[in-house]
Image (cartoon, rainbow, N blue to C red; front, side, top):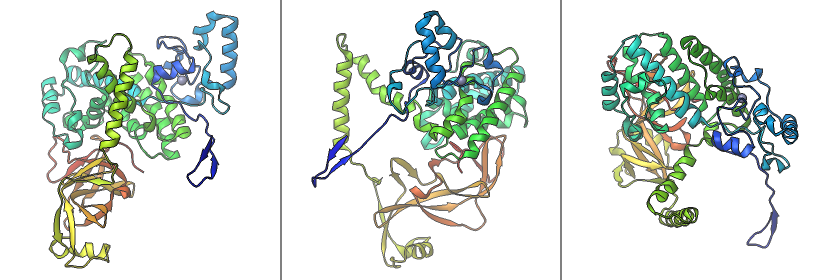
Length: 463
Ligand SMILES: [Zn+2]
C-alpha cells in the first residue's frame, strides 16, 4: 500500500496475515475443520483421534497437521465426501490463499474456554466433591460462607465467585455456575479459602495446585523458553495425576487442546494476548442491544450503527492520558517522612519545594491505591513485594511510593508467597512501567493463623 505523507513523500507499506485469533469453534470454522467437538478428529492442530486423546499427553507424540497433509486430506475429500469424519476437514480454508499463511501452523489457543470455562470448572467440581463428600474435610456451608465473606480486595471484588450448590457437586452433567472471570478469581483464591482445611500433600489438592502452576505460565505476559519446556512436563504430570485419581472419568477434548500450548507459546509468545475474553467483552454491547431494540428485520445493521455511535462518543469524550486522579494534595518536601529518599532520587528538588501526592490514581488504565501490594523486583527467584502508601507526582510523572516487605518463602500448599513487614522500614519509589508486574495485589490472608505474616497469590508467573 502506498501512503502519501503531509510533506509529499511517498512510502510503501506491505503487510501479511500473521495470526488468526478465535475461540475453539471459530478457529475450527475458519480453518475448514469439523465444528462438532464430538467428532473423531476434532483437533485443528494435530491428527490425534478421540480415543488416542486418553494416551497422548505430550504434543511430541502427536502427528501434527501441516500444509501437505491438509492438502492431501482436502483432495481425498473431493474424491470421497464420506472422508470428512476420517480427517476432520470439511472444506478448504480461504485464508490459505495468503502467500505466507497456513492455518495448520498458526495456532490460536483459547485459554478462556479451555481452562476457565473448561478444565477449571470441571476440576474444581471434582476436587471439591472429593474433599467435601468423600473425605469430609469441611462442609459445603463452610465453603460457601468463606466464598461469600472472603475479602477479595478492590481489584477482584467485582469477580467475586458465586456460592456452590450442593446438587451441582453431586450431578455428573452439571457445572459450576460461574463466569470465566469468576472462575479465574475462584481458582486463584481457592487455596487461601480452604487450604487450612486440607492436609498438606493431599492427592486431589495436588491436582488443583498443578492446574494453578499451568495457569501461572499460560496467563503470563512475559514468557521464557524455559517456561515453555517446563509447561510441557507440568501438563504431562497433570494428565497423569488426573487419570490416576479419576479412573472412571475420561479426559475431555480440552485436556488434549492444552498439550499444544507449549508449542503455541514458542510460536506466538504469551497466549493471553489472543484469548477470547477481550472479544466477549466487546460483544457484550452488541448482545445487550440485540435484546432490547426489538428489531426483527436487520439486527446486524442496527447493532453496527449503535456501536459506531457509541465508539464515536467514547473517542471524543475521553482523552488518553498517562495518569488520572480525582484529588491531589500538596506537601513540602521536608514535611514528608521520605524526605531523604526524595532528595536523593530527585536532585532537582529542595527541602522547601512543593510536591503533589494522592492516595489513589489510575496509571495507564490500572488503578493503584494506598494499601495495595505491587511486585517491584525479583531477587533469588522470589518476587519482592511493596505496600503502596501513596502516589507522588514529580514533574509530570507519577511514582508509586511505599514500604518494602520481606518475602519469606513460597508456600506451595497455598500457592502463595508468605511475606512480613521488616523490622526496619525500607521505602521505595517506582514508576509503573518499571514494576515487575503491573497488576496490583491485595493483602490476602488464609484462614490459618499467620501472626503478622500475610500471603500474596500472583495472577500469573513473573520472571
Ligand atoms: Zn491436537
